[in-house]
Image 1 (cartoon, rainbow, N blue to C red):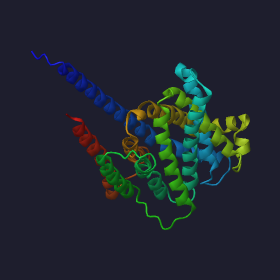
Image 2: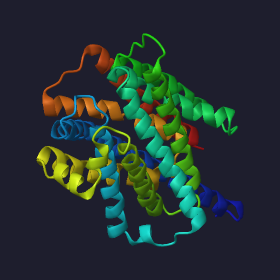
Image 3: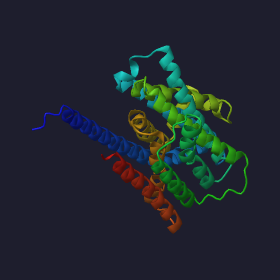
Image 4: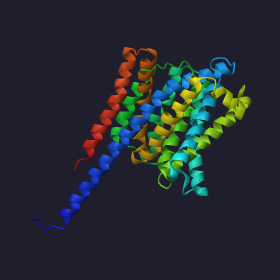
Length: 331
């Protein structure tokens, strides 16, 4: 038997490393589940938004439908978290409220820019530009924060970006307002991901979740004031009339509030701080694959060979990063 006092320390260090690896795997699995919930939400959001347009007598593509649904969805989700999770109601301070409010403003800005950009460019270009968070996150970490990701992350970024381009089929023909808004959306989401990791060091995850939801709801409701038919829609009577118009609105809105909002963003706030922000952004790129697969199952759509190749590159980038990172962590 060894009398070397460093032996127990070595075993303790290995145990700590194993625990850290296990936590990272759990966090990655949780964020992957979040992307599944977000991907399913695209179909529900589209159906609910189009139904709001019809009820309001608005043309297809009007902004009120999606922005109204965002306001109701996040308000319902915020109130639900406050009601069901005691931790979300405790420990609030003015400084903490400011930090959480900032995260909420960044989230709201990203969502609003996404919808504004989608109305001014093609869905493929919008999806591709939004997915450029995978480039902005490591660039901000490297240039602004002086914390460059590991080389293996850059390999995943390159592969995943190529996969998104193939999957969306994005071919921008110029740089106009829609493209600028799409890039602004990607940048806002990138800053939001980094802000969540920073704020999570001092704030409870459930406080962050509830606070972000309510701030986002207020911003979207305020935006409705400037849209055609929006002033009436956000009154209690108007909102009640719209939401009771049929299951295509109230059922889809309820699904959005519970799964892609409380479920997915709750997992984001709980588990994303346990991972490198670039790794989290890479996992989130699985979302368009889930969205396409869900649309295929729900509406009988199809995916071309090019789209399947793009999906394979995104998934392959995630698997490659996970395998190489696990090897690098081994003693």
